[in-house]
Every structure is written in C-alpha cells, then in structure tokens.
Image 1 (tube, rainbow, N blue to C red):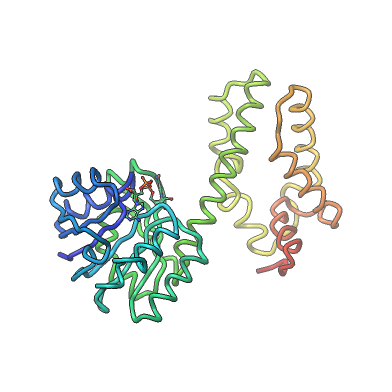
Image 2 (cartoon, rainbow, N blue to C red):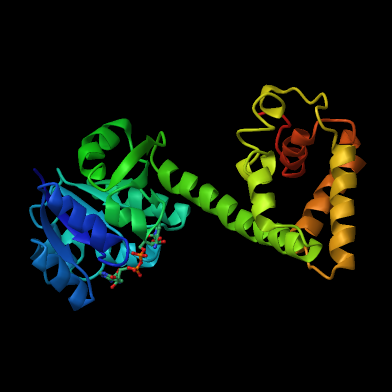
Length: 296
Ligand code: NAD
C-alpha cells in the first residue's frame, strides 16, 4: 500500500481521498479549508501543514484543485510540493485545467527531474463518493501503469489516453461537447413544450436516434469516418428540416440560438457544394473551414 499525498479536499477530492483510505492506502492530506482536512483526519488521514510537508516521503502526490494557477501554486509556490518531493514520486494532477497550462506544468516538473501526469476525471461528485469515476489517464505508458492501482481506487473505469496531456485534452473536448449539447437539448425540450408535445415521448424517441445518442456512434462510423460521403441523408434535406424547425420555433417565440448557428454551418456546406453529400460530411466541411485536410 502506498503513501499518498492528497491536496485539494473539495467536493471531488474529499470522497476520492476517503476511497483511497478505504482501499488501505496511507494518506497525508492538505487543504486551505480546515474543516475539510478535519473530516479526512477523522477518516484516517494524517494532516500536513503545507503542500511540501504533505509530499514528504510520498510515492504519489495527487492534486484535485479548482484551476491550473492553484495547481502551479501548490507545486511550485511557497512551501510547495517540489520543495520536498522525492525524484521517485509521481505527481498526478486530477483537476480540470487548461491543457496548455498542464503541458507547461509537466515540462517544468520534468526540467526539475520530477514525474508528472494528468489524470482528470469524468462524471460527478456522486461517482466520486461511490468510487465510480471515469479516469482519463494522460502520461506515458509507464506512468499510467504505475498509477493504475491507485487511480482505480477512485474510479470504475480507466482510459489510457495515450500520452502526456492527452487525458486533459479528452476531458476538455468531452466537456465542450456535453456542455454545448446540454444547451442544444434545452432548446429542443422547450420547443417540445411550445408544440404541446410530451417531453417523455420526445425523450423516448430520441434516446434511439442520432439526436439522443450523438453522431460519433451513429451517423459517422460508416460514413464520413470511412471517407464515404454518398448520402444516406443529404445535407440539402438536413438544411431544409432545420429551416422548418427554426421557422416553427420563431412562430412560437422560442429562441433557438444554437439551432440558428447550426443552420449557418449547413448553409455554408451547401454553398461549398456539399448539398448532395451525406449529412455526416458536415465534419469534412468544418475540417476544411478550419484550414485542415478534409480527410484525417
Ligand atoms: P471544490 O471547489 O469543491 O474543491 C476544491 C478544493 O481545493 C477546496 O477544498 C479548496 O479549499 C481547495 N483549495 C483551493 N485552493 C487551495 C490551495 N491553494 N491549496 C490547497 N487546497 C486548495 O472543487 P471540486 O468540485 O472538488 O473540483 C475539483 C476539480 O475537479 C476542479 O478542477 C473541477 O473542475 C474538477 N471536476 C469537478 C467535478 C464535479 O462534479 N464537481 C467533476 C469532474 C471534475
């Protein structure tokens, strides 16, 4: 069982640290919020008075903090982790931070001879409590294997994201998609209400369509991801249907800013000669508008 320093005992960090203790690890914890520290001490952790003291002798140092500036401060600030860190230790940042800041922290740690990896988590504090987080492990193959047992005390699933900084990158893209989709889903739900359509019916229908399942696993795999743009459902028709939906929403006074933005994307794709292509060719269109090759 490992000696682990855990820094950042908030909504996520506190139950994650508690799960490490439950699985038999020895924890030294640090947080600026004393009640959070006291709670972990009651669960069996030792308290440290600074990040440096927490990291002393630890095999793993885990940070779970609100942002990258705080991770930097905890690692390199006054009485920071690096002041006492062993060269054999592995620092695992599980916070959600800016990927470029994560890269810079990784680089700075390497330059000083320390080992650092990103391993942000998916899901919420409820899964942090039950130990069912989704762990998105960046880092080298060696680091991921070394951290695996410790990480799996906090999660039920670990994805090796294949390289330093790739955990925080996949987390970023995942959050981008789910956060934007949340707003799009709300537009659709309010449109249902305005139409007098049962939301339960809509949810049951859309749970089995690309609307609810997303395109990565439905309309894309056998079409654009294979380079096949022959139409199963044409961009012209998608543009027409989106136009009808926006027209109806307009009549019902339901604002649809995301749908309106999407219509512009379909209009551009049509104007670029993709009207007769499959709707998954929207990916090829967005790639080219980003100045990237149409096929990856
Ligand atoms: P939180 O605000 O509840 O906890 C942050 C903790 O960090 C607090 O206890 C705070 O006192 C402590 N802290 C702040 N500055 C510190 C410092 N200088 N030294 C030591 N401790 C310090 O946040 P959270 O919900 O636990 O989230 C932590 C990270 O996990 C964030 O990066 C967040 O984006 C990410 N995340 C959160 C969720 C979620 O559902 N809450 C899900 C996935 C990822």
